[in-house]
Image 1 (cartoon, rainbow, N blue to C red):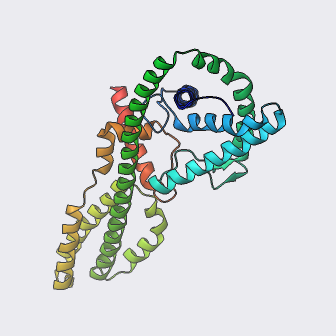
Image 2 (cartoon, rainbow, N blue to C red; image 1 turned 90 degrees about the vertical axis):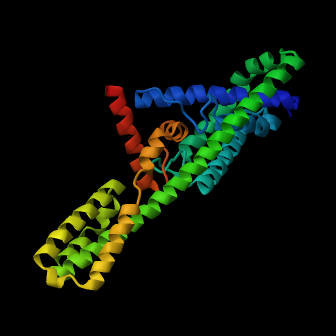
Length: 314
């Protein structure tokens, strides 16, 4: 085992968090052709890389003289860390901050064969090349200075992580509220189709609604709301033409539907685009997706992209 004290281990962790952020931000920025502050936190730190580096050092320590065993230990240790981290983050936040579902030989989208193979080679690179000069540098820092710097970094990073954690929880709650609101709108739309069909003595509205059921689920929330507004307008015209078909029971139900629709707010996406922390969390993770709320998440991404590009083009 490496003969480091707690302050040295922490400093190594922060160093590799920063190195990982530099690499990931540069890579994603090049791929997306725009500057992206990559990661879960807003500061220049990616904990998954820091954690991965520490895991590589620890699991490979007993096999430092054996290249093959170092590689195998790195593959197993880093892959387990990636899987557990990805699984726990999605379980808690309902969002995947990375996703290998499009890669061959992936497992549940959290890990994939190509990534695991890369982790093994990176472990060898880490233990044989990268860590040695960093180790010499850190061990050369006077203990008192290292402790002060590490404590200051710990305070700053802990505060950043706390804000990011709270923001991710808030985003999760927004996704859940928006999904529930969209489902409510779809139920309103379906009921309005039935009322229109009854008043208009036609089954066309119901048939059309059934045919479009799958398509409607892919519509943005604002498009569903627009569809409901169109149905209210059409209902008004039908009632004017056939007032005798508009029964008192329908009148009460339509009034209730109109009241529920009026009280329904559709400003969640706008609020997120104005929220610095939520907006940056989404922009910093352009490949993030949600198994359950992905349609809503894509709406939010599109809203932010449209506003961002609009401001940029001004």
